[in-house]
Image (cartoon, rainbow, N blue to C red):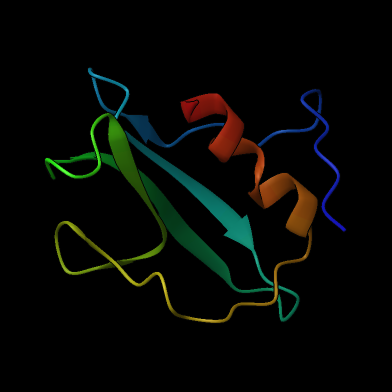
Length: 87
């Protein structure tokens, strides 16, 4: 179960001007620190009006996100805070 505590959050490394992208760093259980990116894009589909896609995961290349990787974060609850920052 994920518990969100808005008083215990990661400081952003970067936030895009339009708030559609958010970078932050999270420590894994093995002590390694990874940079994670949250990116929201508009889903331009006439059958799904007003729908957005939220990608989340470590950086791949200059602008990509690996949203299928499985990482073991030291503080999983804290990792999910940016989801609420972006909403």
